[in-house]
Image (tube, rainbow, N blue to C red; front, side):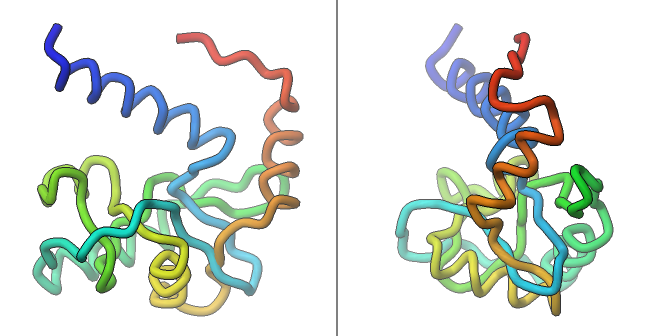
Length: 140
C-alpha cells in the first residue's frame, strides 16, 4: 500500500474518531462561537461563492445533538482568508473540510452567524461523557 493511501486511511480513521471525541468538524450551537484547529499557512485557493455558501449552509443545518449540545456532523469547509486545503487541493477540502489556525477558526465560526463558537474544554468533557466516557474503546 502506498504512503499516500496509508495517509488517507489514517486521516479518515482519525476524522471519524475525532467526530465522536474531539475534532467534530462539527460544532456547538449555544449562542457563542466555534471552529477548527490547523497550522498557519499562507491561505489557499478560494472556492467560488456558490460552493462557499453551500458549505456555510451545510455547517449550520447538518447537525447532531449529543449530550444536550448541537454539534456539526462534518468538518467546517468555509473559506476564510488564512484557511487552506490539505495539499492546496479543493477536493481535499470537500472531503475533509478546510484547515484553520485558531484565530482564523474563530473568524470562520463567526461567519456562520450567531451561536457558533469553538468548543471549550467543558464542552469536550460533556461530549466524552455523553458518548460513554474517556474509557470508551473505538474498534477499527
